[in-house]
Image (tube, rainbow, N blue to C red; front, side, top):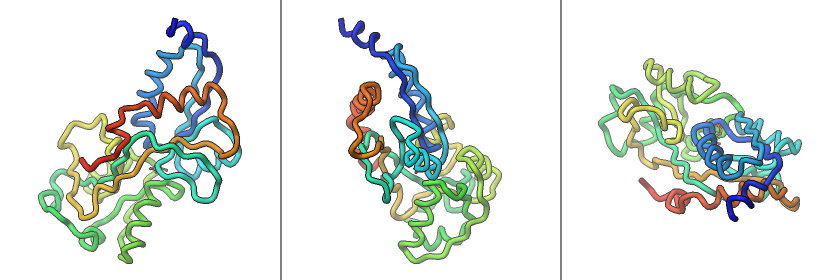
Length: 220
Ligand code: PGA
C-alpha cells in the first residue's frame, strides 16, 4: 500500500534554515515525519550568513532561505510566501496612520537583527535603494528579542508575518507603510549540479506540494 511504501522510506535528512523559519518549519516537519516515520530529520536554525556558510561547507541536504544566495550556484525552489511587515507597539503614534512614507519611518528608532541576518540585509537594502538615512537604535540577536524590545517601547522593526504565528491578534501594530508588505518567498536551496538524495528529494516534493495559494504570495 501507499502507507507501507512511505513507511519503508528510510534515511537521514539534514536541514539548515534561517531563524524566521523556526516559526513554520517544525509544523511542516511534524507532518512530514508523520508521513515518513523512517526518515530521521535534523534541523539547524541560525541566521542567513551561517546558513550560507553551511551551504558552502556542504553541512546539510537542503537549506531554507528568505532570499537565494547571489554568489553560489544553486537551485532555488520557492515554496511559500513570506510577507515582511513593519511592527510597532500597539500604542505607537503611527499605528493609526495610512500610506506612511519611508522618509517618515526613517526618523523612528529601528531595532535591527544582528549582522549576518537576512532580515537585517532586507532593511538595509530598502533604505539604501531609496537613498534614505535611517536610525538603527539597537542590534538584537533574535526575532523574539526584537518583539520584546518593540513592546518595551524601544522602537520599530521589519519582520516576517510568520514570526507572529503565536502572538494574539492586536499585540503588535502592523504599520501601514508605503511599499509594504514586502512580498518575499521562502526558498528551498541546494547546490546546483549535485543530485539530491532520495530522502531530500522526497522532502522537497513535500515542500513544493504545500498550499498553492500560499506559494503564490498575493498581497493580503
Ligand atoms: P535571518 O533570515 O533569520 O538571517 O534574518 C531571514 C530571511 O532571510 O528572510
